[in-house]
Length: 447
Image 1: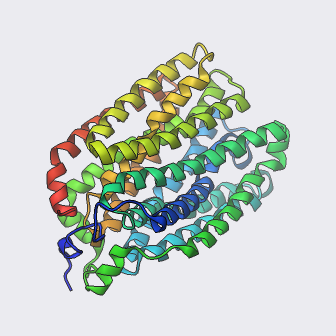
Image 2: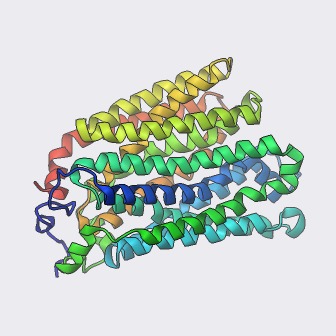
């Protein structure tokens, strides 16, 4: 056995398929659809918290706390879910590289469903005092550990099933599925504000989305029973090429450039998702007093365009390369969000079309996993991707809501400044991918 396997052994293709140029078949379609659907339901569980952040903040913290401090602490608990991602992701990735991708794919859903259901049942600050936010924090940590293994595991799982020529499209479709989970959350939040009054939501109805999320999790777990282990892992198992030493040790020792590139593009992904999709509805409600129902309807439309953009972005990356598409979509997101956000502060006439345009360029989330997946050899791919993605998300995604909230005290345009800056990082990362593309191909995807 070899701690640093030579991926050319796998039929001359690090993606493990004997024909790297074959078309998508029925098995690929089944794997993609079930993975995307399961990911959508699990991501719903994780993000539904942010759609009810204002309500949760009022119920789980003292009523005499200043509004800005309550918001920061509420987003702090939201951030705790992100900060827990690296540990959960690294542990699940370790066993995913040693015991199999599918087992961890199932485990992540169970670890998500239980705490989501529990949040829907737990008492508030008025009933149990300080224990309420502490319990909420604990459940968010469990959710974070689960989601830490979900996204990297899903990306590795699907890309090891399809041919090399369709890695971008597969990542785009799966990312679209994960974003669809956010759409489900947005639609349910919109429906809640339509059916229930603000007082009813605060009294009891806020629990329903969390209880429903727990049910969604168990449904997703059942669906994944029909998935098969990836061909690459089976081949590594049969040829005894699984990593002997700790996979994460190999990642840190031998693949620092790949980690740096993967973390950079993940930072862009966090700004795209956390600021433009998750935070913007609440920001518009607070800053310009936009009707909650109207802001969520616009948000739902934007997410539909994120789904479309993810697939388009992934397909274009297969044709023109990951680097150029990353650059184009980063520039498009920076410009579109600046125009949208600065306009909304004064005039909401074009709320829907401008937010839809932002959503389309947020579709850059479709190319991010393709860049990261191709950066690591098969034997340590899960660990490399999981470490890079989750550490970056913990640092940047977890702290973004608090940073933007604090920046807003100085300048209402802060969210647009932040997104533009991070999109600049995306352009640099795209240039790096183009510069080192040949080198990465030699390391991870031999001809």
